[in-house]
Image 1 (tube, rainbow, N blue to C red):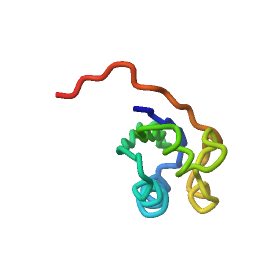
Image 2: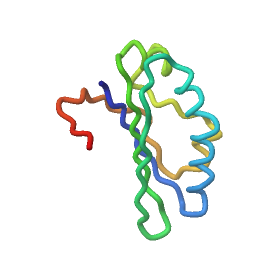
Image 3: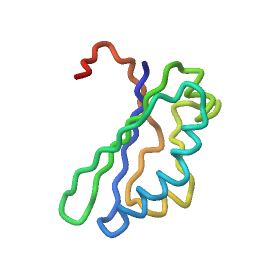
Image 4: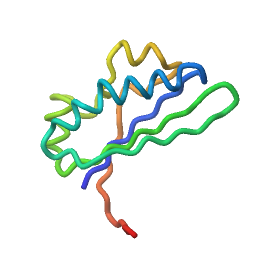
Length: 103
């Protein structure tokens, strides 16, 4: 399994708007892709900002390319989603899961 990691920061009053954009726009595109295994959204509030880490799980790099395009390291974030963010990674990181425990 491959985990794709992206990070962004929103002002507190935009945090829920960004999450709605992710749920309504980005997530359906991923869910329609064969090989998408799920996601986790992490958030941490720091003063008036909310930091996000989004982890998506994929079975192969081909599945990632099917969702992200020919540049799989490029973040999949459209202008309307970026408008809710103060900071946004332009690129993602990919990690192969070497060990995992499921309870």
